Length: 129
Image (cartoon, rainbow, N blue to C red):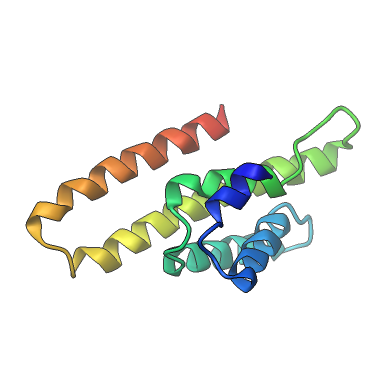
């Protein structure tokens, strides 16, 4: 949870609470809830500039409980799906941020976004494997 606190250090308490609740909701087994939490998580990450997207996977790791041997098959499935939906939400937030920033940035700043995207993709792949 220390990494998540670092990721959310620049956020107000309400934003940090919102991210924590949305991340936990991603592993919900209720019908349709996971998709709703993922959409909300992506939208919040897209507008919260206080959270660097390269640190967003740390939020998922901190608030989605890791699968252990004591998990029932259904609980493990919900957790894995929650992690996957969370990673997709982070990718969607990244695309949304780049789309929003793309219209306002100058040509010389465009290369910076590519490096950020590569770093984010590397972190997402590390989370999956």
